[in-house]
Length: 514
Image 1: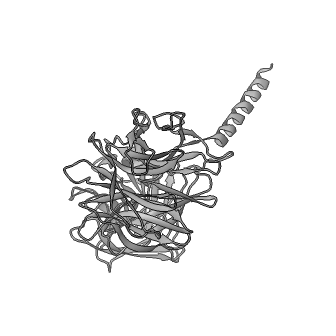
Image 2: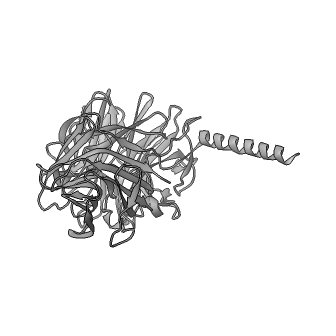
């Protein structure tokens, strides 16, 4: 065979193999953003998912998919926070019953105690109506899950996580409409080993009731979350824990930890587990991203995962000919008076005033308590390598520009104030100015380049094409300190100052670069 013929054949073989792989496998995560504690439900031929929003509004991002691999954000479950809540919007659990979609969600009440509320809608495209608190138990009740068994509903939750006693998974019968408890709570499982117990999925398959649940540490750089399983032939137990636990854990190489998920099925009955995981290395700074793995019931009637007890990035697609989309750009030219559903803001720390439309966005707000970081409008990053940019189109004594935002006392900000161009950090409430120079142009274009998820470079431009790097006291300032225990930093826009001195922006653009 001639060399040229061989090379052509080899190239053809590689192309066929790549195309075949695109149709038969996908790469986790399936939602490349910080969306912890995912819940999934199938309605008709569409899958819907939601997850934790923590200290960002709107509340609980809401996604849809036809193939379990490619997900599109529809919006949020709540645009306004329910009246009984204050903060910490965690672990929404979706449940479809009698043509209604329910969400059982965790939040802190006015006394800052975490309890479980319930809301419902008659269609996924319609707003949810909140029905208030449904589980108010002790010093904390979180991580709801609902089981339908022989036409009756039961809710389970994590209890005693803040008490000096073993954690328990409790359950109670629900009313027929799913809106109130209708019996006495009972224990499903108790954490005798002292390794934690939460994020449960409770279901019936064959002769057994199963509980998939998460143990160990959920969050942060030292997270070691993992998934256990227990079973019983009686709904109320006693439940036997699998001797081979954990059935799913991080691999220590690419995946740091994993857990808190829910199962769904395909039309042919296969089970898929949607859960969150941290990636190792630079991927850690995208937070707890959403992953998918297939689960089966073995010949011994224990639940396990088809690729073993270590989570893996490469998985077989649930449906044939699925081609996974890549991480995409985000760009907002603010032409609409309706804010894009990708935007989130720091609601516990500021009451924002956000006015988009006619090619600009006006941002200001009223900070709460001792908030030093003003009003932040951010998105969830979808890559550890990206740039994001804007143009400041007004000039006043308020600070306006780009931010990498952790919380009210931890951030990096790059922008203009009066006739100055500044880079400043706030770390544990202490502000440090890295750069303070004369504003090069009245309405500067600004850009931050993020590498490894935690290193930043700063640029300005007069025309948006020719960028000049800003020199600061610290080259490549480390942004890693911005990680909060239950969330990671978000890139976006910021205003610090009086509400009557707003920030105005001409556009915002984020582009993954690797």
